[in-house]
Length: 351
Image (spheres, rainbow, N blue to C red):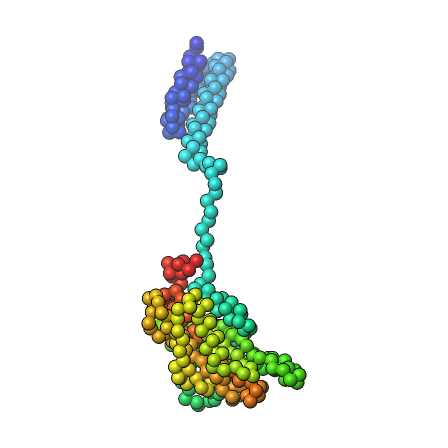
């Protein structure tokens, strides 16, 4: 074995013993670096004659190519080994069952209560109405027997919009869903007239859930809150119907027959007589306590007249309940602000 064959064999052996990329680069430097053995042999060609340079240079180039091939082969072997280790560490068993993704969201508790209310009253024959949240003075106050400068307006301090209606009064964010009493009845005025012409009675039976606004903010009040308005007008609709209707609603909403209902005298400009509705659970954490859940009363004749109906023929009741309040009682929440804080820890309980 001549000198060049021995050098190639030595390089191949050194490369084979390199187990990391750094070791391999150190071994390469001994043979192909600036001071490497093959580099030094190339430098020595200058001392030879022309004929000797050709012969010696060709032999050195063959040896250099063999060393470079051995170096490249070892580099590839180390890369393949590193990839194999990585693949083994990150191995994925495709035969395993998939991991289901957790459901990220769910219905907000207030919306759950909202939908439940619609379903229960829908089963009792009530239509569901919807109206604007920015109202003019007529629908929000005056048509509901609450004219300008009436002291009852102070009970519903609200937010006004920098825009006036046809009477020159500012629009406001509605303080209740009661304006829909007027809007819904007048929208069906033609149907009422046609029914009366036939000697029949077309009843008004509707609930209106929606957002409302008042200047109020504490643990049990919010500047924006949700209310559901109920209205039933007909020929012989009385307080008895109101009590039966609302009691049946409460039993269905709270999923219990073990509760009582009472009327407590109150005042609202759009009903006469008026009453607060209280309920009392007979068992559970709230047992024995009377809880206010709604305002109600017989619709005032002036309000019926503002609907375009004859108050001598159309009588009935209206009520207004806080959806947030009902949700608090149903889910045992003691602070209204929790519904609007957006705390995922709280809301995730209702998925």
